Image 1 (cartoon, rainbow, N blue to C red):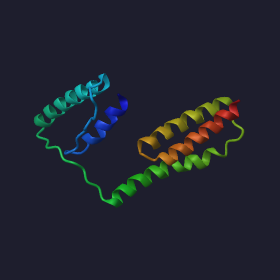
Image 2 (cartoon, one colour):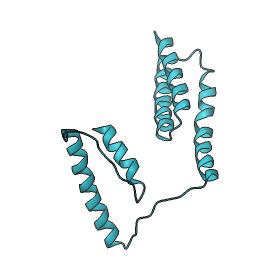
Image 3 (cartoon, rainbow, N blue to C red):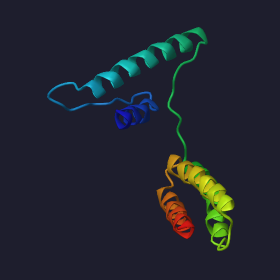
Image 4 (cartoon, one colour):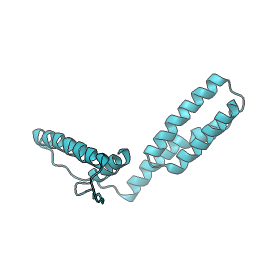
Length: 132
């Protein structure tokens, strides 16, 4: 259900985006996503009408995309390098560091920086093994 909703949400970011579901029967998850999408679409249409908004797709140049992803790289990468210095940390410091890294890993994944998210995940695993 969650992945269907995420896929539908990705398509919704484009004015002409649509989701095509292939199945012999509509599953409960599919129906929930369809119902939720229709509910959200109705709310958004009412809001747009009330505020005279015409939906339009955002177009970015290649440079704009590279800049936005490089900003995410700069935010995440120093922590990956910095955390390797911590060989001897208290249990409390280690837990705090793991929590911080988990937030950064999720942010990296959210920004589609999957390689960095994987690096951070591996570092989290190393820190957890240190605790054993």
